[in-house]
Length: 138
Ligand code: HEM
Image (cartoon, rainbow, N blue to C red; front, side, top):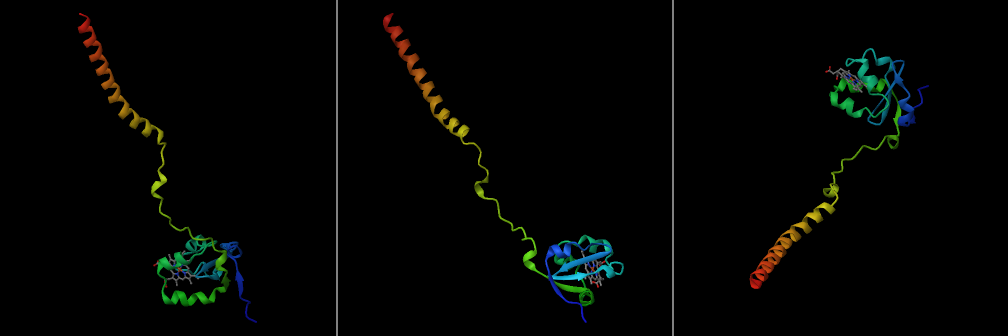
């Protein structure tokens, strides 16, 4: 009787992560590649490092030949429930307003920009007024 094909979760497959028991998840399917480790032309290390996760991208990045793909069915043990995969992080651009420094110093500078010339003007008027008065009393 053929081995029963199961629906695994990624966690079920992830426990098979060593040289004596090595399973891979490629394109939603689980492969027991334990007996293939030593034969794999790419070496056993890469296969071991691809355990415990969805190895589809790793597998595709190598550009495996069609004969490599044909070999896969020999190691197929079942399907993997894709809902058990961790959701891929989606890139969300940083919001424009992320940089939000304390605006109080900016506000203070604006006030000073207005008040300092006004104070100088006031001082000049006061000096002028006082010197004028002094001249009158002479
Ligand atoms: C059941 C799964 C796999 C099978 C049956 C398989 C089979 C093969 C075969 C037959 C080759 C020789 C080149 C070719 O025909 O494409 C190969 C090469 C290679 N494989 Fe895999 N492979 C599997 C999974 C993986 C995974 C998951 C990775 C990466 C993590 C990987 C990495 C490599 C690398 C790096 C090479 C060498 C490529 C080169 O030297 O040009 N393989 N594989």
